[in-house]
Amino acid sequence: MVNQQVNKRLLSDLEAMGFSEAQATKALHQSGNLSIEAAVNWIVDNDNDAATHEMPMCPQDPVNIVIGEMNPSLISEKVKLSAQELRNRSRIKKAEEKKKLEREREKERIRPGKELLEAKQIVEERERKRLLAQRKAEKEEERRAREKIRHELQLDKVERRAGLRLPLEGPTSVIPATSLVQGTRSSPTDDFAVFPFKPAGKAELLRECLESLKRQNKEDNTKVITAFQTLLIYVRNVVRNPEEGKFRKIRVSNPAFQDRVGKFEDAIKFLELCGFERVEGGNFLFLPREKVDMGVLKLAGAQLQNALTNPFFGLLSR
Figure (cartoon, rainbow, N blue to C red):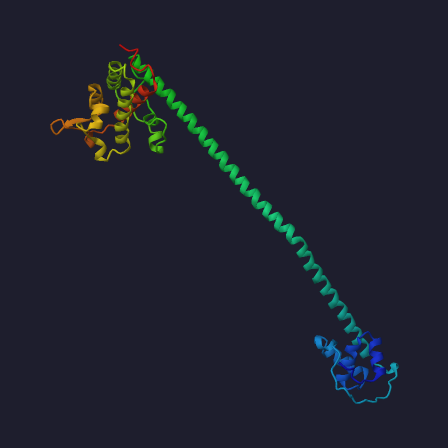
């Protein structure tokens, strides 16, 4: 880059007015070195052009332009005002750029802290939801435990009255279906379903069958428990699936049935009290769908459950 040959006096005056050497040189070069006023007017017209502040390119052997020196006092007030306006505009622009840069830096500075705060809030919200879910589960578990204890107490009361041959409290007494399945949890409609008791005579007959079976086989308690458990399975299957025919029909000659239940007369009588009938020449025990009585079946399940859990069941009775 070679400096353009311009009038040194004009260049010095422009620099004194606050313009850079490159800006003043470019202005004089583009305005033809005519005057300070022409150079300032060119700068005003091209202030937004970045190239205005670059030193102009010129040949290696520029031609000297000889211009008579101008008296600084002849510079018009208009030119001076234009130069001052340019300087003010430049200062304002630089101040705005500085503020903008400071704002960007401030954003960059606070961004990590903001992201950290948002991440912390997300973690805290997740922990809050987890604790709420945990408390809800604990309350539900407590409610189920209280419900189970309440039903067990009610069942025990009913069993004790039946054992003492006392009449039940009324036709609307209830018994939980949970007692049908030891150590398992059924569906909500099974676990907390209620049903009216049948007359005390049915409960006594069911209990007498089980007591008789227990007394007659007290020397082999394992067979008794197996019989009770098998009867409970038959009763439970019908309660849970009353529409399923395979659960309501038992082949009497089946070896497994004979070994577990069929060899005990009291066990067969127990099933007949539940509604099973001998069909097809006595080869099957069948419970017709229209004769399925959920009240009787659940009462039978309660009697079986008591027989399985009470180690003295039937042994202290007549």
